[in-house]
Length: 274
Image (cartoon, rainbow, N blue to C red):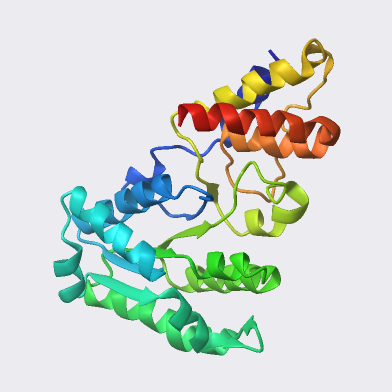
């Protein structure tokens, strides 16, 4: 089937769903989590818990709601975020307050970013004798949700510049629904170019199955008539992209007249299984 051909062609580009369990990540990851953030909470919990278990430093820049959710998930996983915060292994910053410290005229100021975020990163690493740092931030997501798109991309660039001078792993999250029209190459190109991996919206395979079923039903026999370039959904400057998300990007670019119908049906099937 056409969908499976795309999947096989994308195998060397896929983000590993178990990536967050790796000891030496060396990456800048991004996850789309709207409208349900349960998977985000689980992933961030795994990411942070693994770092704490390995006696690495952890830094999270979050909204109050996500702070509570992440702490609860860490506790469920057997970690003790309260103790980690008190002994300096875990640093917690408020996303809105931290943004206000380096935004000037609605745009991130590089010097103020250095004096706030970069200083915190350096301090966190030094407290644990540079054993490693796992950072999670959703300031970019706050900016994106406020439709401050250029500011969000500029902030990603500042994070990446910092990662060139200081070694740490970074995990970002955006409130973007992969079924929404916003999830398309033209809108997300600069965002994707800023990361090394896009984490899957559904590591269980449920999203892939929903898309396949919807495509078969909407396109019917036309599925087999389509010719799909092997890596049509991927650009060399993009990160590793999971199978399902790669297919959605391909559909919106190459079958725009049918993409909405396919994805509306796929959403229904996915929500019924998820």
